[in-house]
Length: 126
Image 1 (cartoon, rainbow, N blue to C red):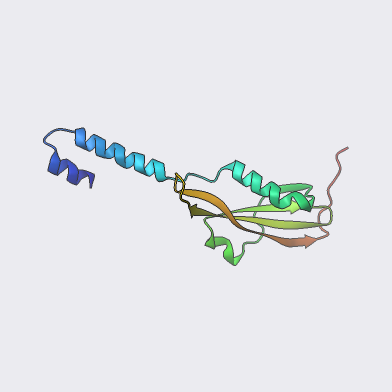
Image 2 (image 1 turned 60 degrees about the horizontal axis):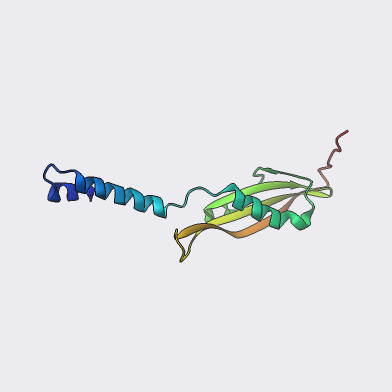
């Protein structure tokens, strides 16, 4: 498209080509979503895990589900509690909105699965 504009409308004048490039790059940057921010993940993680009384957690995938590839981004957590160990999957999708920019990340679904019953005991620091 840009080369077509350049060949058709310019006669050794690069003004139109530069303007078309800037418009294309601005449009792509304006609509780009970027990566999923850590603040969104922390906020959603705190909301989900608040009633669970988690002692320790780490980002680690133990077992993938069939739904793992149905979402744009899945953040796996292993949650260690006194009585058991759980796996939390935060599932995010890019959602179209009427606001500008037109896409944003949204937590669509989350699941908690029991991994091992009575396997983790939190060691107290001395």
